[in-house]
Length: 478
Image 1: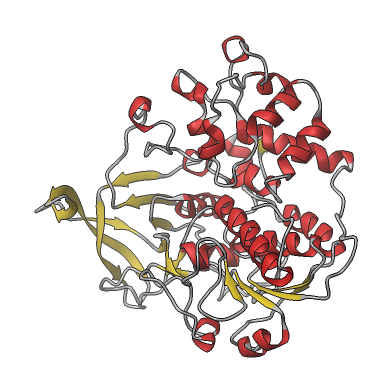
Image 2: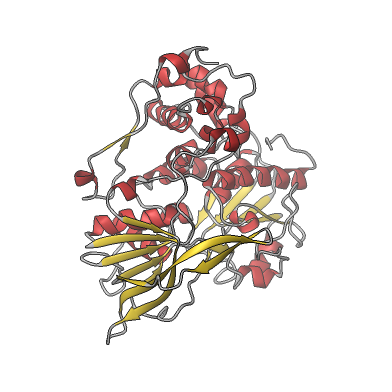
């Protein structure tokens, strides 16, 4: 695979970025791929057991496409890539690349730049016109409703349409894409990337219906009656709250409120100033150290925030974990995103005590306390450090602490579908079937908050299960 000694002869090349002073003035993508990706493909060693396969949730056949790129066989590489992944242009932009952490070369140096090679393959495919609709040779006469147009719903819809079923994809928002559309800023993921793939899916027969809230203006019960199968892929959109004094103050928002309004304005929607959430000239505090928090940082800096501080309740991880104890699993290590590089203060082991407001009911500061983590009876427990309270100025606070489970009100309540102990939709791990006949579920709605790549995997596997349910057999890959 690749060149046997390539990882010794060639250094890893990462993405290059526009200067911070330039890129924070706009919401366009600013990352650029290395020019010589064939050399990067050569770094894939003949490691015997490609652990990258297992590190990748959709089991991408990574060595094969690396080898094809090394030898300049780009069309072959694209076919291999698409055999496991419907949307490599999505994952090539926003996946955290657990495959690279599992790369054998990562044990002794810098991993193969798998994610960048993936993105270069699919973008070349679009550029060369190799990516075209795959229209089913014949129709089955079966109708499938897919509820929720995130990556799980899109993957399931495309697979089922290619199998010959009539697929209708329902989305409650005014555009397709779920949290990929509104939850991820354009500077990380330009939304024309979704539109481009939608055009292919529409030609393949997928019927997109926006502004359709199942359990609201669309009856969930009628959907079950009218279609031969229904897939629930609405995601896990119930945000984790922070019920401390002052939570009701103006200026304290869920991260998705902040990010969604911003993206809608970037996409050209008219958002009245009294509804828009702006960080311009404000001291911003982002609570939550993950990717969503990072997106709030990048957005705030582009608004022209006075300062941005990101708080994390967990301890600061090591910058370089011991690979011999963590490989091939995804390590907990200190990572710095491009948004964090653009400017913010980061603090760890900090818990929020209360929000402090002014006479007009608008947040002005946040009171915090430092915490320590200790193991008691085999479990980690959080303890406040006495006398460590402090305050930070804050005219805008975004809560980016993740999601707890799907929204239960509306569709799930109307259907009466069973839930697991975490509040997700309960389903069989093999066939994705719920407690309701001919109703299936996939993605975050089933497994809880997770990655885009996991959602694609679930959507593909659920599509296979639905096809088998409808036809008695299936040729779709699991």
